[in-house]
Image (cartoon, rainbow, N blue to C red; front, side):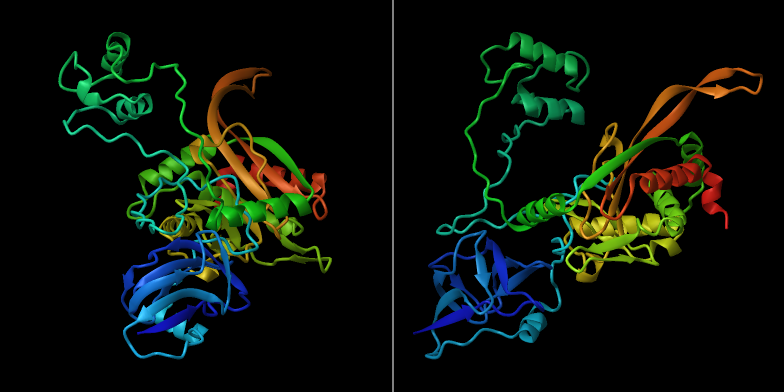
Length: 443
């Protein structure tokens, strides 16, 4: 019997340490060669650590959330082989070869702060998480597990099921008054008359035990980068209202005749407008190195977009967005959003952005004040589209009241680089294109 010390290898250029974001083994577990034993997060990506030997785990370096220096002990394994000399750990090339280049680059690049909004997209079903090790503190989850579903099959709409889940009601106990489907009225009747059955009244508060959630992994990266952005950048936000009635009509017509092309949301049109107007406002498409005191104005638009993942928010980058039409942008938006959700983004698809767009889609609210994606100097946030009556000249010397689709557009800027007049002028230029959408397709 011999003890093998697996030391954390050099898993990336310039990386001095990595964070433990998940253990797949515990002390006393038997592991086989090439078995995944831990997930380590660097500033660039999350990397799986595989055991180079078979044996029994006798020591772990720390708990989830701990930082481990490159070259420090990660795991000690008691092997059956005669291995009296402790190896120094694998080289970066060996690790890369073993991993087959499969770095899960869903984490933020160090320069990207977590942005407060998300790209319009339905979240994917998360993969099941590995069971936590018995002797190592696993990361606590942020939500209490939902109540177990009733074994008896019931028919109900998603809205009724969601409401029943929030109220703690077992739908198998609810009587159907009409047909075979439970409706809101049936649920109301149960809440009124089935007292003492373990449900919560519609307006009752539900107490639960306090939880302590360790801030680790991507959430810690988001916290650190958000704090750095707010600490270093004097933000200001400008908001203007845009009439997108004609644009929405054009978008609907294009979608009706799109054939096999991807469905168009508002975002591709906004990106085209952003790219068309940026050449006249180069101070917005820039990166500010505040330590060197240098602003680099980019000649190309590498546009970051906030995307939601199960682990947090990432900002994948659409390279050379200025060269893409609305259909190509829609395809790239969908591809990057899916890669972000499934943690399949490549390292080169993170970071290097020159300006960012962030959107909550239909949840976009009236106005937003997004946080700048440092070291960029501007971030644009479209808000939700609402219908309201507006006055429009009728050509007869008066006004008609018509129904219009309106959207507020927010822009946050670094006041060290961008003046308020420039930000307002830029939004006005974007507004002009979006309110006359045929100009988006003109040369």
